[in-house]
Image (cartoon, rainbow, N blue to C red):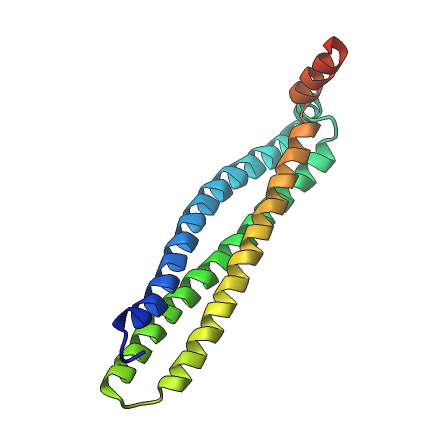
Length: 163
């Protein structure tokens, strides 16, 4: 790596790009969480004040509430995983920079830093993949919730009869 400064830069740029990608996903997940928590609060309020309004909106209000709660918990887990991914990738970037500097001055435990960098990057990648999986499961819950919606269900039934 000493002869080629670009090799050191690739160890820094890769985790930095993954940090940015994780932060963008984190922003999107935060927006989804805010919408889901509002939906959960409105549904809970409707459940406590007038159960009939939920029966009008959903084919199965109890299942709808379960799916809404599941979406909120999945998004919370996703946000925690994305926080971890951002921190781990940022740490990987700093370890890569420190390792490159230590190799440059030919002093210090560069091997130890490189090992830490790979461990941090691996854990960050695992957190990013787990967060992505949580978002896929949350999206499936959203689809199931949409199927419980009376308007959507009736429109789908009309389209099936027409076709």
